[in-house]
Length: 111
Length: 115
Image (cartoon, rainbow over all chains, first blue to last red; front, side, top):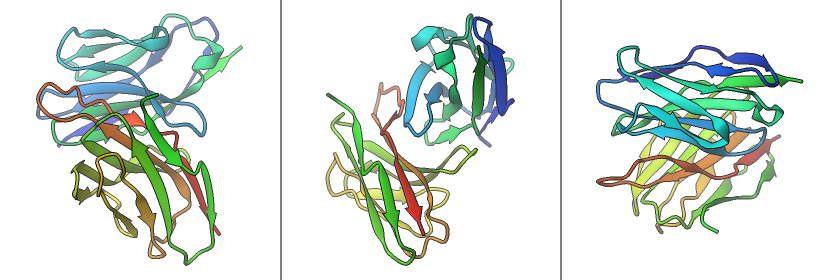
């Protein structure tokens, strides 16, 4: 069975502090993994993607994620949160046949 | 500019009426998708198409219909049979084939309100 679990539905951080959004997946195949960001009433924007190259992936706006096969995880991090990072974040898995979406993590950034 | 357009951004309909949401892409992608998003929830797949003149049901296809007559266009019709049609609808496309990285590109969405 394939699935994606985002471990936190809400995360709050203070501006300037690190961000960690957690994602675990289960897949019978070697997956492609993505993180998307969605601002209110907007479409989803691709932050970064893992496609079996380097396990540490750098994305836009200072975000990065590390693929850990042994832990089946693909957590999203950023060293220093900015107010503009407040949004909904989705972890997505492509198994070669279908996309699977996590339920999303809402990030709040406190000034 | 390359991308996906959805129109209109906001749509209001009376209960019992069919309504068609537009989705157009100029990315030359083979695959296109329709998702529904409800408040506080993730995305749920309605229909997808991997090639022109072919499409498959997703997880929540009941009450919806699609067509794929052109590579660039994938309109979604919300029929009167859909019991709870008020939602935010997102269209996406992705490249396919050997070497494709399969990331999806999303349109800005259409918010449908049915009263």
